[in-house]
Amino acid sequence: MKKKLLALGLSALVASTLAAKEIKVGVLQPLTGPIASFGQKTLDGIKLVHEKYNTLPNGDKIVLVVVDGQFDKVQTVNGYKRLVSGEKVVAVEGPLASSMSLSIKRFAGATKTPTVTQIATNPRVTKGSKYITRACFTDDFQGTVAAKYALKHNLKTAVIVFDMKQDYSVGLAKAFEKAYKKDGGKVLKKLFINSGDKDFNAQVAQIKKLNPDFIYTPIYAPEEGLLVRQLRAAGVNSPVMGGDGIADPALLKKLAGKAANGVMYTDHFDPAKAPTPLSKEFIKDFKAKYGRSPSAFAATGADGYLLIYNAIKQCDTKANKTNLQFKQCINDALRHTKNLEAVTGYLTIDPKTGNPINKPAVVEEIVDGKVVFKELIKP
Image (cartoon, rainbow, N blue to C red):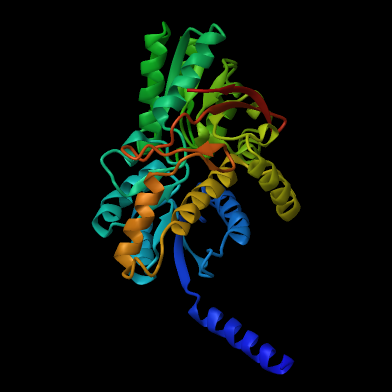
């Protein structure tokens, strides 16, 4: 009798295993190229939460299909097409940067693929799109945070340095300028650079002549480090603040040396200020696995995956027989996410815009290559 029961048990287990499906989720991040460290940190966060949250209540398994977008529009679009058409993923997390997210926007709509960008902050990324959802705040808010911080500290004149090639940089510069002027600040000059530039002597000379109270630099870390180094070498000591695109203290210290000290930036998360129980657990597990505290990229990467996992859990594979039906269900669930416990806080998505509601920002400062929390600013 025992043998018969054991055999029946094993048969049931085998049948259950055979019935379980693999559900593919694409991960499209810049794992090589100028902002590879951002992509790697994001992937670390995604993989960590995937280890815990990969099985659905019906036994189906979520597997990740990772593609390197290389921070290149052609490679990003090709990678997205490969994931959707070749790998038949049901959702994609990424791309990371605003310009890359904008490059795949049309394809997300055409293929009706639910896409979550965890940290692309340009407002145009989700505007008019039913299939791109965002896990982070937008530049409208991030730029306002920087402007309010500057004026709160009596920094009434500013120079803006932005990257003409990056939608993220252009959008954030506009948002800062609008908020800064509205509240009484004066923008003395807007100076532009291009991705990959290494010589900023012309911009530095103009900034030194203008002697602003504040320098706003919504650019990426590779250019930021060199710009700051050249500013300080020229004797320009005005406070410098960037956006989340420079949230790489190690790279800034490598490029700028001691000149990186005092550089500030707005960001999505600080591990010293864990906002949820899940966040505390994530920080503990991340330190144990990687031997360091999680960055905002890791935290928002985790949030993006948790949004997708939560949405997939709500969709029955039997009721949604085709891949397209299943994707539509996932997208609807994503857009109606309410009070989901995540790493950066509790996420509620506005179904009309695809953006999270009331996401706060933190202001960080780099001190000796480490990040020091300064302020939490809510919408």
